[in-house]
Figure 1: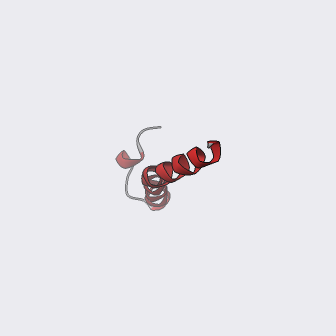
Figure 2: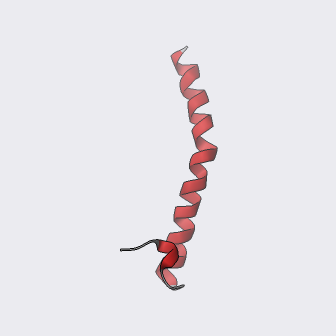
Length: 43
């Protein structure tokens, strides 16, 4: 029950860290696209 980066480099933690990293950065890629799409729907 601590940060995933502080866990030992073992099998479940590697995949979990990579997955959370992809989710974190994909937010900044997807968010402007969704905002643009949403604005076009409201017009």
